[in-house]
Length: 399
Ligand SMILES: Cc1cc2nc3c(=O)[nH]c(=O)nc-3n(C[C@H](O)[C@H](O)[C@H](O)COP(=O)(O)OP(=O)(O)OC[C@H]3O[C@@H](n4cnc5c(N)ncnc54)[C@H](O)[C@@H]3O)c2cc1C
Image (cartoon, rainbow, N blue to C red; front, side, top):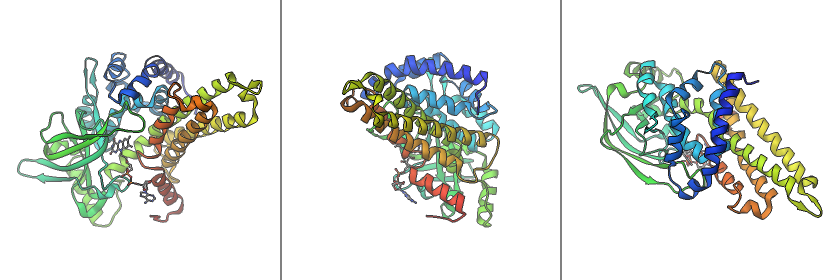
């Protein structure tokens, strides 16, 4: 798990951006509750928001680079991190299901370049299908004459939804097959029929745009079915024959993104721990710094222990994913579960250590707590991660 020189160099560069660009801007964009375009532009200018950078991260043979970059970015600010890294969710959807040719065609378009920024979104969740992704109602219907697919439905809670240039949409083609009858589609820029619905006003990560995506007779060429029709037809045939294939379109993407989402949660927790440690050394009560009160020192000891444990879990999951080791005990879910809950717990302890200052917007810990709260909900709630771990370790199909 030791990082090599290349990884350390990248990390130092990302840390510079997180510390000098994201941190100072965090409060403003949290209050404005808008996409921080100038910050994304700055990230694009230095090459941090770019296809090349993400491709380098994906290509790292240890699998650790992408998640450690995620940790560093979220240490700077989770809302801004998600505004910058949200497009990577769309890319992950393309990489998880697409052919090499489709990845080469669409992934660079998810970023654009400095001066001409593009965004991507991954559209899975629906009002009646959040945790239960097998119940998606968005339909994709194929027309063989024109070799085109038509998508209809409404997606909800979509990061970059409606403002993205590329939307990767998971839709049901064979509803009776549940998740196994679903496929992922790229909806190219400016496709008629795709529009933004309601933008959500959130508790945290407010610099990241989250909205509904409406799909009304959205027609895309056959080539936009990720993985291609032949592969999809084979998967459907296997499912009809009762044979198990690879995981569904949505699950394949979530398995790939979980270590990075866990890493973001670790970044928030680390930020809060460091802030609370500094504060505890400065703040004096009863004639001594509060860190000399064992109750506070032990809190900090527990905070640091959990942050480090959460990091080790996401590093293990990322390494296993890259080296093709199967998650036989739900190791990806363990990382996401523990890191999300650690971020919530650590940021709450930080508020307590800061006393009234922790409850004030003059200090960032209340924002970090609001940001952390999302990490036990999106990309699979804590309950769903426990379900996946329990199923993996027991072999029992727990509901
Ligand atoms: C900030 C933010 C950004 C998001 N971005 C995206 C995005 O980019 N793309 C996207 O597709 N989605 C996105 N989502 C949606 C997110 O993935 C869903 O909100 C999440 O999967 C939970 O679904 P739900 O909200 O419908 O909760 P529900 O599924 O309704 O769950 C409600 C509660 O019931 C529990 N529960 C449900 N089923 C079970 C069970 N079997 N056993 C035990 N407990 C259960 C859940 O854990 C939860 O506590 C985002 C959400 C947020 C908050």
